[in-house]
Length: 373
Image (cartoon, rainbow, N blue to C red; front, side, top):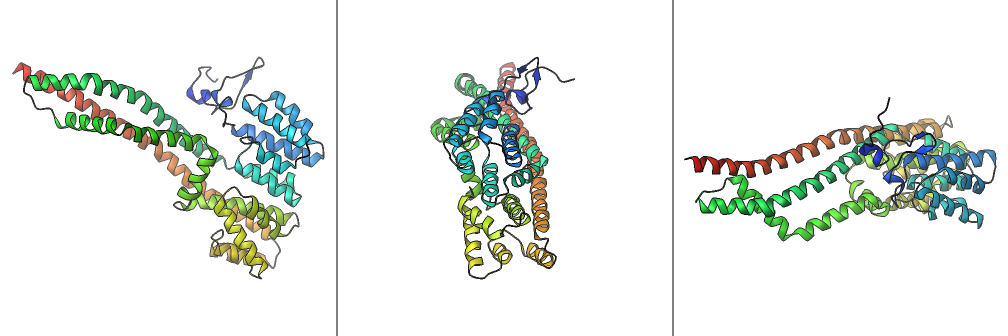
């Protein structure tokens, strides 16, 4: 039986909303302007897939769905309904309503609509959401929030110590002609550096918060800073593109159509460049898989595996297997990073607390023993 205590997990919307007696649990995440939970995004995609499968108008379904939603997602759904009612194509409408779905979800809607396989593409996209990636991302967020909470609480305590306690201790040490210990000197030195360059540290904190909450800033960091450094993140991007190519080929559409769509509408600038070069190479007579390997979307081993499938005509199956393999490797890497990050943060915070304790209590201990002698 679950406890009704409002833990931080429920407060920030990490647990799915439960209903009891017609009332939903309160969640700050529902009211954050840029925040939409994963179940909310998946619900919108499933509704779009159902409308495409059953060939029913989407706007009335979304309007009814908005009545059961909560928070800012209600306004986003209503805006999507207004855009669709004005005759705007579904992919354009979804992309204009920022925060309704993720970038990956919006791209899946675009590729499925362009290929005429919207329902199949969305079903495949929803099935490809790796639970391990979701759990690893949740652990990373927990570590981030824990670090912010400790910095906020600990920063106020340390500020009080440095502004009120440390100067008085320093006066007492001078009055009794006692030399402070090395931890006390180091603590005062660090405090002076922080006070002198406080605007620099405040800017770092502000930028960190912006990167966490802003989709554009986070996308910039992933594209130009993290992806070039970490191969598993590049594998995730490649797996997504391979899944879209597999869905297009399975529907009997030419793969070049999906390549053109990705080259024009992919949210990642590097991925757009890769697909654009691949499309130009194919138009000049180069094999698609060879071009993708040249642009580092595929590896040479991937090209060999696809080459064995050409006589059998099951390239789509092989593309899905390669995408699942890349996604599984990336998920395992993210799990390892998430598993190590929280203990490292706890260890770093514990070391800082120990440093402050040695600075204060070590000085008090020296004063006590000095006065006794």
